[in-house]
Length: 210
Image (cartoon, rainbow, N blue to C red; front, side, top):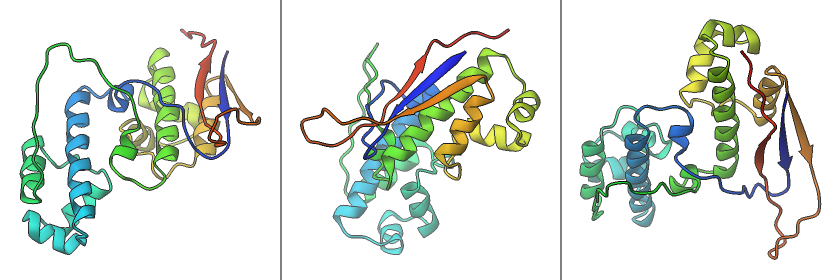
């Protein structure tokens, strides 16, 4: 049996390490992270210049819908070179450096993208990454995973591709219990100097299933 511990207060999450796209098993995790980083620069440029979606689209020479996709971190239809061109048209000076064996940094990619409620998105990402790990550990097919969680195969596929925006945290925690995991929510006085509480996600005593 595995247990999951939460410490709650004001949605300040203790940062995990690595690439959230890699946590989802994305085979192109490094490319996805690069696109997200460039998108963050584009969003920062749009905000700094006070551009609306329409004005930003005109400056970047793309559709307004594409500006909204970038702001919503929906980057599946963008290549790295296209994002670089958009950034350049908005006045961004980008420098991409390739280093062998570069260490991965930590942090919240949703905060980097300037998304509202970034900490909650990051918590959801950690929960979904754990669901993906448990499903992979048991070698579950989409059909078996969907039956276990009581959702459709399409929902499972979408969830494990990172489309979890519409899922509330409590439903994702309920999904964990389907894998024979106990989820504990513990609230206690914060000991941080700034007086703010923290939220942490922690896996305790995970057990393999055949």
